[in-house]
Image (tube, rainbow, N blue to C red; front, side):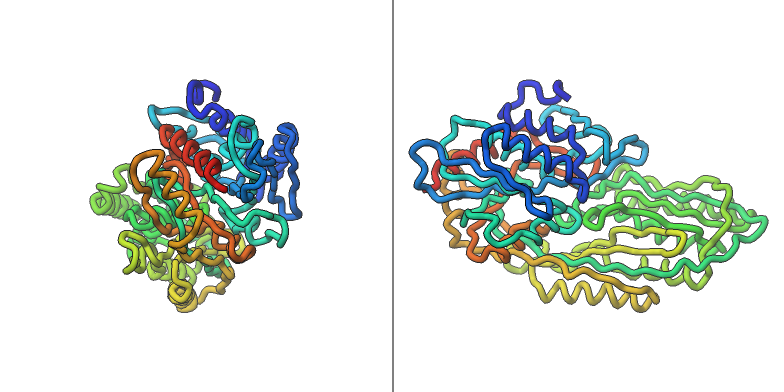
Length: 483
């Protein structure tokens, strides 16, 4: 761990990034990291408190001579997405992350890195500790459960924050300022697990789809990456045509991640086993060819599976497979106003086969509220046609861009003075807590930025080391300039 950060700058940021990597902090498992943040703030002589939801707020007084400057809040979320490769042994409830340095990348050993949003947490801690900085009064807000429910932001209470300006440190491209984000909603369908006994004398097969990149269901949805559930459905529909009966289908782990892996178990007559194997290999070759550019490591394979005792009833199998086939996935509409911005999308995220039920989870995003309604309506229509019982969330609001924002203008001028070029001003097709915070605190002036990272929400997540130093210098320059 220490070797991975040796010599990196800013030293304080990397010190704290390594420290929090030792603390398990998956969504809804933030008790330990929350305690660490409160304890660390108090050890640094700062006031710190934790609300009933688990959000942590610390305050640092202004540096000498800056007492009259306006208060600024630095904000990020303390939880991370917990994804690992299937062959990686890691318990996210107990085990520390293993940082790995590869040239200009910081990554982790077979798991998500947690730079989303650990880099914000580490940055805030560095600012809290450094007594040589010039700044006005500062607040540091660390929210819980951003990744699975935006729970912390949703439960912020009036008066918890005093600042009227907020710097969200949860963006993923250095040199870009974000002033808007999409809203989102989740929809799921469930069937009771109606089962039959597997036919006597049959043979079982385990079908696997793996090697896909996955990634963030907002930030990477436009890249054409493979969806393991969609691929598995194509394979299972073909096997069903030659008599295969499905025992289970499982794939995907997070509603906001494109599913990287899936597996299914089927039962079929022994006489059909060779034909089934040939078909799976044909699909492997065909789909690998389709996705060769974006998914070079895709593998679809099968192997013998013993002990298949129960299978889905034929009618249920048909409903589930046709629902999976019919559910949309990917970009639904691009923005006509902001070039390159995905306006509306949907993610077919998870299928789980349990002893009592089969469930499919999806998520929809859009920067236009009425288009979220339309996308959710389409998904729910497919579930209804498939006979599923539907559930859905109320979702979270988007963040409408304000090009005249004072903090945006200050950030633009500061970046240009530092680096000699204008930063890009963008909106992002992902949910930022700014939308909710803006609702909770009307009039809050906000901008979002961060260092460059890629493949977030997947074990390939990596943080560009050189951008961390630029990001940190930019943040400190903004804090110094605020009057």
